[in-house]
Image (cartoon, rainbow, N blue to C red; front, side):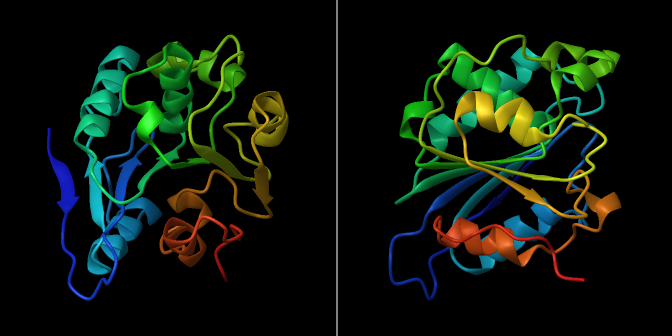
Length: 207
């Protein structure tokens, strides 16, 4: 497995943060995706970034992906530790919380982006095992949820399916769909701003 790792502190007065960026189903980390863009921009700013290619992204195994998350969390070292998870990996993070995965307690901030609903996951054989039956657990760190309206992978609405039951602040962005390349989400300045300052409000991509 290859990781997209960037280190450096040039021009950064404070100790760098550490970011773990987790992709979703069928994502091979294409250069046009906002997560790839984000990893590059954070690295240029001197932050520590780990953006791994998770095993078998077209036919993922939940336990294998959870083991990868645990491994990367164990190595995540920075002044502040931040996780940004998109799509199936947003649900992966919820599974990690439900199981009390080691290392979660040390994460400071988490951004869950466009998690697909259990009803949709259950209908996709390759990732049906990612569907969560219950949401009766507590999330570690400060967690935010952002999703698009009209997301075909969460037609019920991410705020209804995940935000309200988990007590997580949810931001629904107009016209953002699944917040993927098909929805026009290459460069996304707002997510970079949030990574650098967790108080920033997440907004839709301009244009």
